[in-house]
Length: 120
Image: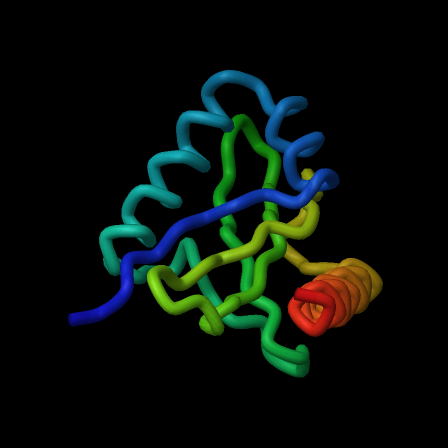
């Protein structure tokens, strides 16, 4: 049996979600719910030329939103999709500097996780 998928937000992702307008937030949580049910579509894609970075992508009211994420499959009971941070913009292009930022956050997450595990 496959482990359930859980989606969690790091602090910058939480800040992004809290600042979303109600309609945009509803849309985001709708696509997160689909992903947790293993329904994968164009709203959740791996970014090319990245080190394992994915994005939840959606648009609302002439804005394009991106919530950058990565997978943590190391857990015994669940698979995590970790939200790093998000952006809202007027074009459909994903800035490379935002992808690099997500990669830095991912590396720091796993370094901290592995350092904590070694202490225990």
